[in-house]
Image (cartoon, rainbow, N blue to C red):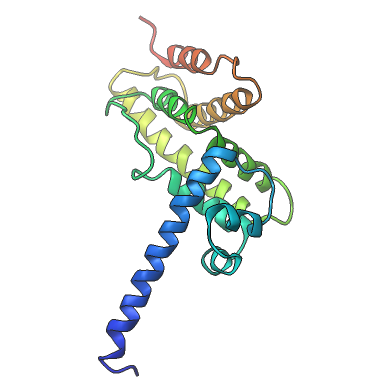
Length: 201
């Protein structure tokens, strides 16, 4: 059992490790926001981030683990600043999210890369990430939709779970179209979907 003198040193090393990992993540977010997630090696990413390959593998283990960590951190309140009213509909939230994403196309491409990898065999980290994200997002959106239906802001004849899945599909699909063609009517299509889900006047 470690003595009392060793415990502060262990806590200090642990805190430094967390801080170092966060520094690497913050820099990696900047790199991916600029260049996207072109398939490359951890070694090449380490050079761009400014750390050794050994440091990157120590904190993240694999390229997929790094990509998932970068995406999740880039969507934390620390890095993402969206102004959405509390009573916004789920589609209105997606519209604001799309507006924010237009400022960081590299991170949007990173997300698309992870989802595409999740559909291939041999990518368990990406599959777990995408499966969990979609399930959590559908659950949260369905809850919001039920609340909005009770308040009369969304039509009541639509199944909340189906609407949640539709909103996610529309948002992701339009985002992919925008990545391929910046003239794709992403905002207009989401606005139309929001209008279709509103109760008849």
